[in-house]
Image (cartoon, rainbow, N blue to C red; front, side, top):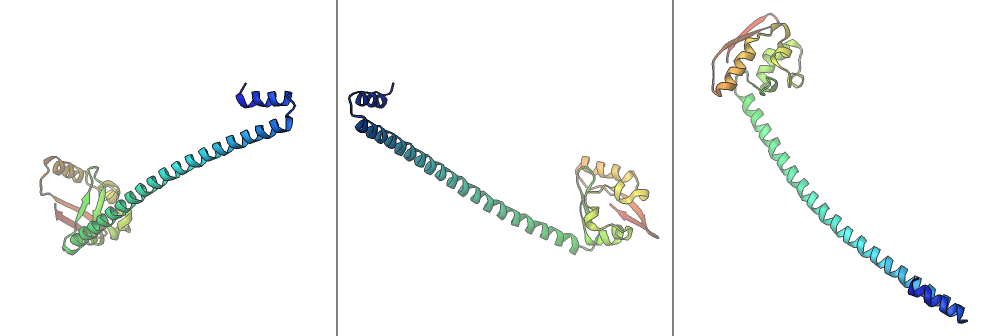
Length: 168
């Protein structure tokens, strides 16, 4: 039995019921105040932790925004370089999917087929050229990737009524 309850029972049995009851309530009140104070302290600690985490996340977000801006600047620069050189140029990933094509390449070879530049991104030669696809194109791409050096090939496509040939 707790000390408070023991004292309460002693007082009641001794005839001091009201005094005992008041002391008991005072004990509960003190206990509640202590518990409330502990809860407030825990809340303050948690709030401080959350504020620190928020500051960290805010800083990381600022860094990511800065890096995003830097990447966008590089993309704009590369697009300008690709489009300012008067050649039809393109970039494919290791799976042979178009990652980028110059405006000239799009205008000469892709647009006449009714395919937007955005829709062409992510397509392979086989998907893009359909019935005009030449499997040697993929063979040439694989050869260049393995050698990690330039290789010259003559490739071509028939687009509309035009027969296009180019040196790769």
